[in-house]
Image (cartoon, rainbow, N blue to C red; front, side, top):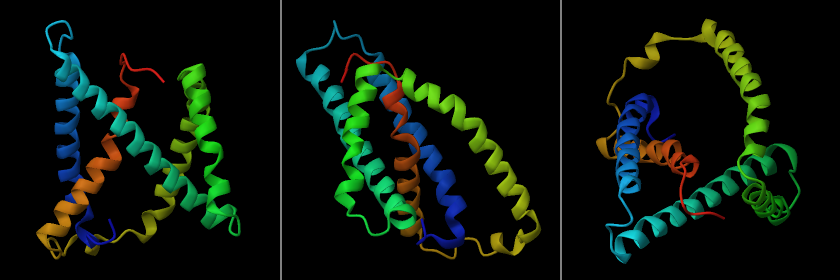
Length: 167
């Protein structure tokens, strides 16, 4: 969201609204009774769900590759960095979400503590002047930034809902 500049908070608020609307639509599609539907209405949510899986997989893969190649494995080819990720996904599909939940139980409190320590460390450099130039970016950039925020923040959520689709 670097192209939004100081209006990133506005696009984040709009992105939360767009993402909430998307999640509401997804839940309404999920609540439909499959016995009353025809084949087409059963296939469309399945295709959407699989498309989101592929999209999120490619998104996570790109972010992980960029992070790992920029900070840890500087001279390693990207293909070797991305190679273990499908095996990790297969293992998660095979063993269920409990393996992720166990890791999250350990890492989430540590991440929250580090986040608050970072926020406390940034308080002395906080300036209210950063909020004063409001709407100095074009409306199209704010909308694009809000769509990016809605996409990155809400697309993983349907993957955690119970579904009849299995790996």
